[in-house]
Length: 439
Image: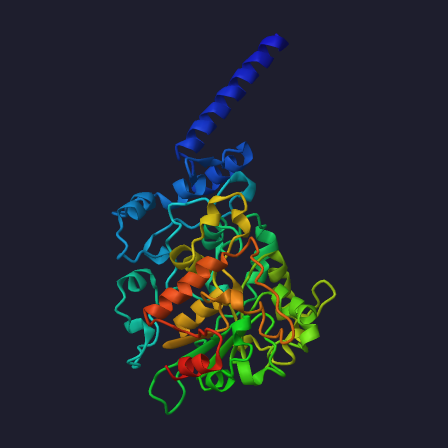
């Protein structure tokens, strides 16, 4: 009798599990229950390039809404589709962690090229504004109101789950919700745009973006750089002793937690003592990885991170009102539409991303009317040292695996030729430099 009872119980249990599996797979359970069972049963894996998060959350018909995978297949390059246009059911739980090792190359989700957009930017009265470019390719790719900055008011569970499909710095792949979300909720919403037209001017916002390339060594471009309304710098921006070539003003400093700390010892021999800290300077941070979220946590709380006090690196100029964190959608948009390297199709794809300098240029392209780039790689880069601070010896550019320098070089030249940016170039002689300055 006991044996028969055990057999009946086993049969009942197997039948019940089969019914639950069927209901979970076919969406016949409430969302939260279905999600928990999927996580427990281990079926939140990937199927044909789509995660179950896509199939559940993004391919739902609500009213007359078309499933997202069909929408992205149908839209033309002229269409603007944003996450705000798609009505999604509220997510209640973080999706299971997606691992980079699951993919041999950059995964392509059906929502890969869909981004959050903010309100349209201020109307520009600047006749020379790059937004007035007649170049069709640029206008097709450029999103003037792409969401640029991440803050506590534009991150929630649904956004966490969406962004968890993308590797850093483009999302939260391999990160734990409980480690990162509390930090994201510390980031204040910016109280003002990154940059505004100068009072009494013609309405144009003119910006210079200054890289660290050796092309600036001996260029005497400092006065021209400082003549712009705003000056962007990044990484090891050595200024003292190099003012004649690179200027001495900094309005916006773009960095990661690594670049702002490592520059202190990488550039110490060139006299570098601290990151730029002009009065009223604005800091823009690229959230590159977990160490950056630990940095942000300590920065906003006024605590130490790994025995370092982040606030000391800003030399007393840190202010929540002047601190901006680039949004993952903005970073992914820059990569996908302008700097999508072929290296993303190889095994090292998780580390491949545009340089800090590239993100600085695109930050300027979205905040300014005119952009001039100095100290970036040009066709004749082999003539110059890696860094303008190398006055007495020359080192060649090192091509690190995480950046596609040639792709960036070609883009800067293309944008220059299309008159979207002005790229400082030279061929070596001082006479040719002077001609370039007057052009």
